[in-house]
Length: 567
Ligand code: GLU
Image (tube, rainbow, N blue to C red; front, side, top):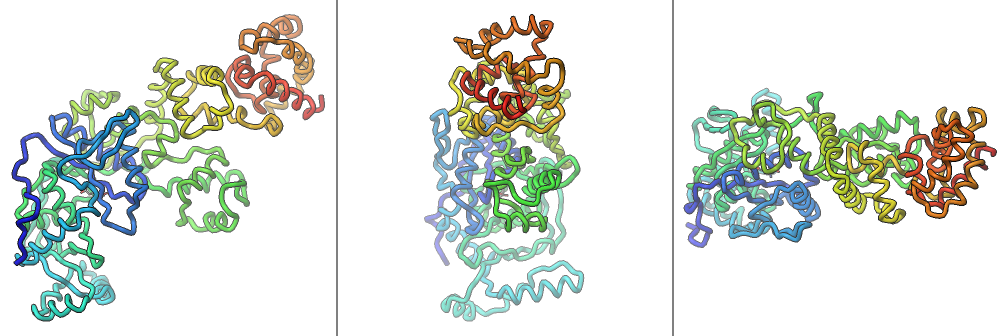
């Protein structure tokens, strides 16, 4: 029998303070559903003086990546969901998160630990080697489907004699290890769903070590929850049937059983799953609406574009999808935390909103901060039924938070957002011009990204600004007596003579003209000017617009506009 005396001691020293864990598999970006799970785990532990642990479940070698792990850490830190134990990470405030006595916190670094417990289970008769080929298992699976009975592993490996097993192992026949599930029903006590009993036979002898030698999720999770002293497992309802397997393993290993709470899933408001596919769907709709048959420049190759447009199952990579969305000027439906960040949502709004997806604070209270969630979160108010992710509500929460924050705060946050996602704006504008742009946009902004999306005219080269082919542009330029274009020609020398290019001075230079020639109606000269320098009819107040753009660019664009429209 294999000795397990050198294995870490299991959860005997647990205190009464809860320890929760968030255990993502880093196979992509942190989905909002995962972020909601992390938030609830964090709040449950931190609100009760406990510990919140982050563990990276990267045993699926094909699907895990280091970049994704780092992305998860960054996203959680951005949301303000800081972990006490887990991978070490230095946040933007210089604080180091994670570390702790129960590491390593990457499952791929814990293989020796799992193997010790696997040996213990095999030696105790709770697990066994199985050498069935995948082809042989497939045949049996198909037979079950044909017979319309649920497939269950038939324990054929248990027919092998000890000697046969030894020979297979010696000669290196590919093997998995299966858990020998005891007969009898399995009862799960769940703090949210209540008590549920699965009948005997529902759980068959599941694999706990894969052919590649890595433990399966079920095995690693049970060992780690015990060794990391986890007292409460809060995770999505999709894991509910897995819990039955985990209970079987805990019993076989003599581990304590944590308290379970399975959280409702989050769906789109139409009841569909919130998935990456939603982005491709939105992009295809954008392409179709514009009647495009070729991809915009610098986005995607024609052949790839054609395949993607034809086959609805093909998904674009993250970066390509974002480039295409920019080129089409559409906002993709956000799915992952970094999508929301890129779209200019505030982390405090997102955590507030996520808390409402599956939990209620009571008394119709809808707006609260992280501190409130931490001190009030409980499992009694977690709902059993799926949550509906209402994007319009999230946007209105974000808008409220943005418009009610102090101006300087908005300017600071917009600048930080631009540094990450729109550096071309910060390169183009002085600090003063940027502050002017942000200030002029504050009252109308629903997100931190909006000012960048709606003011592209600022970063277009003066020589390449194009004018919208729209009724409003034509009206501003070609209609009225005198025409907008003529007014433009008349105010140009006035602008040329402005020495200090500030909104106030620019206004002063034009005011006399407006009084004399436009019956004091500044709009009559403002709109042609706006069209001339932005290419369209929407921008911040005109004197701000001109000041932000700068004198040389403004005059150059006015010149080009006069030529373009035949002035
Ligand atoms: N690694 C699992 C996942 O990402 C979570 C497992 C758990 O919470 O037990 O879905």
